[in-house]
Image (cartoon, rainbow, N blue to C red; front, side, top):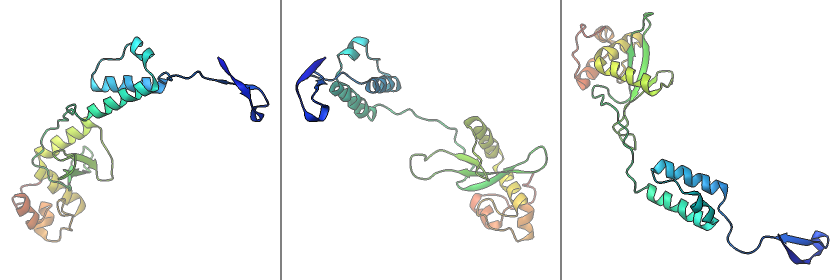
Amino acid sequence: MTYYPRSNRYNGGQARPYRAAGPKPATERQINLIKKLATEQGTAQPTDAQIAAWTTKKASEVISWFFENAKKLPKKELTQPVYENLTHNTHYALPTPDGKPRKFKVQKPKKGRWVGYTFVNGEDGERFDRDTSTAILKELNDNWAGALSLYGHATGKCGYCRRALELKESVERGYGPVCAKNLGLPYDPSNVW
């Protein structure tokens, strides 16, 4: 270590150590970030010789390159089955072994980055893992009219428009005539579980 030749009154008259002029080596944090970015983007990991030669400036350039080129790399496509029978912001119910229906809310965003995806939550806000939500969505999609009807029977409200079911025929079916027309549902009592 080299010592600064002059002393000053702030350090008690002692000579201060200083680092010799020249580039600083890359920090451990920079090196770890570069390795992480290389793994995420599928590029080759830097060698030990490259890492030893990097300065903080060079490491910053490499990190900047990764962030700039990350936008140019093709994004991984997330795939999800198409649930064409389910509608956005609609409530459904499925029967359970104990006879009490379990209620769900389905959301299908119409704008933003999640267009084309279908999400399901429990009516109380409960969230499900991917496998569970896929199974629930498949079951709802297979018998969506029955699930919509069951929700109306369980709550006394239409699962589509969320209005109270007041007509005797609507209460029997679990949805009203207007929603039946909008959804293309038959307005007959045989369409219930």
